[in-house]
Length: 487
View 1: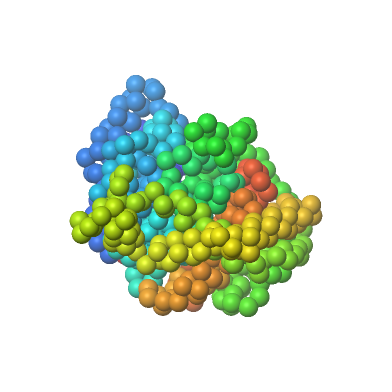
View 2: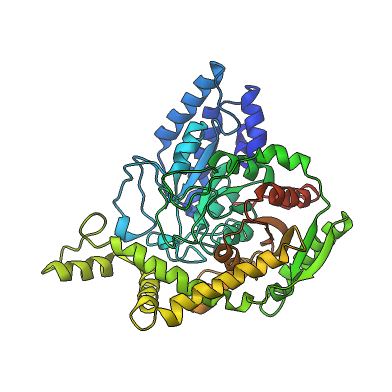
């Protein structure tokens, strides 16, 4: 039985743990063995501590034996994107700038998962400082898509998606600034949830763009996502943008809410650039909801065309500000070649940052500079408000919005060398971050080449319970997520 434990859903494993049919040590050993067997090819992990994970699992088994189990996450190995702080573990952001940095503290989500009894398992690769859509921008290695090792897993949370798809973790955490959970989830055939901005604390997340970043889970099923969200959501006084709201029983609500729902189809998301096979898979999902009695209605999000431009002004401006702290003085990489303090700044940053990070810092510094602030940054913020209003207007007529997650299935490594072509990978996901909304990607089919396709559902602010129920309804009628890559 232990051979296939690493492919079972979290909720099923939690039930096996509760009935003592398996132990956490047995489960963790299964995940470790799988990681050792396949990660040389998938390259999802930056690092992991086998002995520490087994010690955590043993502690979980002792708690359960004493009748003190802490719930469905107790004893479950969860992988962490390498921008989320875990005390005593590396925190590199997949950058040379932080190659030797060890976190002195836990992120709030880490504390919450530890308190729930989860086994903290490994550091997962990403595009450097979460800047990218393919995990090719990592300073250490390019992660591969388990369904086709010549292709990308998406990004920036590519390691989080690929490790889960490959059976190297039972659930993982990522961060989503412009689609960095949903897009890799779609490309790797797993579930990826980006919560409403402010629902999950950002304390202990390495900042890229602070008004856009949000931590969320990757899981095998929507029910697993509900369990994970329940474990990490909630107000945190350490995050000034954390929102104080009652956290429902997401898993319980999943089974209560049955629809039918009013679903909006934005006409702007089904035009030029959409791969025909992706379009067909999403049309089949729309037909499924229609057959279940849902009202399908065309809606308009008229400012969609401005999304990519607005995003790459706001995100780069905030990244320019956030990454100023990596100066070679306080922590991180320090150049050994510097002649004086100014030279130290220049050389430390030149040596420590990769090409895409430098590109975004330069862009962001430019749009914030004297004489350009009003023309670019201020105007982008105004258009951002219009984009959010588009969604809120649509929600007067519908409960959720249904779109493709990514315009294409996974592309080949090295195929998109033009930065603009790469930026357009996030064309369907960016609006969700700009508007601060929750979004989820669920598997909805495969291309003729055997590559996963993702369906995106976009919910109303802080209505994750409803969003999860709508996604769950689709998942229950299909088996896409039950298929696994043959590595």
